[in-house]
Length: 422
Image (cartoon, rainbow, N blue to C red):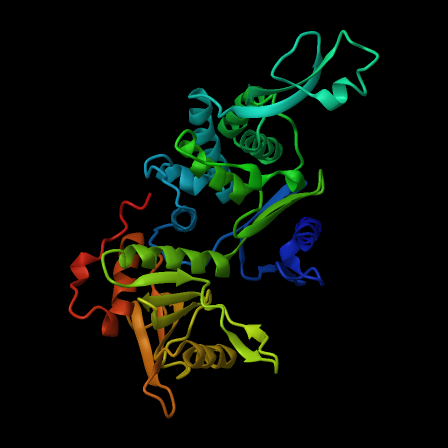
């Protein structure tokens, strides 16, 4: 119970926990229950790994857990546009290492390779009082502050330095991960990296200047590392929190991750068609005031558009729907239906899809499960699922979900599988 109390206390400190501190974990008398998050929560003497419910193949519990970790990292790789070598992590590593250790390993290995090729540098303007002129003379300072010291010249000059925002972000990630890594290999690589970044300024995570990072053709190879650093420092999908010896957490909101994963996979599926995918777009208002100011802005998860026309609205839901034999409504929330009705009206779209992860308890195959006519309307509202257990089939699942009215004879063979997504 003491360990559970410590874990719950760290979880309650996460920004995801909400005002009452219970938004991450439900701390009951018989155990801890996660609420829509996955990740790792660590505290003194113990750690809790929270994995998503994905029905994957696996003989033993250890194999199943390893396969779930692999699918979760795959989803993160797609959402962050990362290229991860499928052979970089062995089957044994997926089974033996926690999600956090695997992410630390992927980040540290990529960073070691990048540093060996040279840290990025750029010219930064400096100001200094020097015995000889370097660069430009700061006339104002020269004839005010240095008026009584003519042996010094107030200089402004550009100097090539590695102490830039990108490297400060990398150092912040290395510093944080060094405190929580547990495997010997991860600790060794992070020690090497800490030595390499010794001359880079220490900047608190909250003060890092992400806006000052510029990626161009000279440093494009750092793009993936920047995405991983965002992930591990709490800038994408999740929040991280650290409280010295009190604990550490890396938590992901599965609703957000699932939405972006589906959006990116759908973009791949529709790449060679006349359709395009807009994620978190639309932004039309439900109401407006007398002076035409909008109220209650909508933001559908995914809009599928042909030109300016919205042909399908997809709303992703990270929860399990019930089989129709168990519940004719399949556990679909009434609020979700009301929301989709608003989308139909505002975006003048007759094709609405609620998309869920597939699971074995459903009697139907992945794809569209139900399609109901909207009352007094030609439109329809569908429920559908995609199978996350088989990454290579996700594109085909999405193609089938969209194919009923969108593709006008386009063969499903034109839609690529994502076996090479790593």
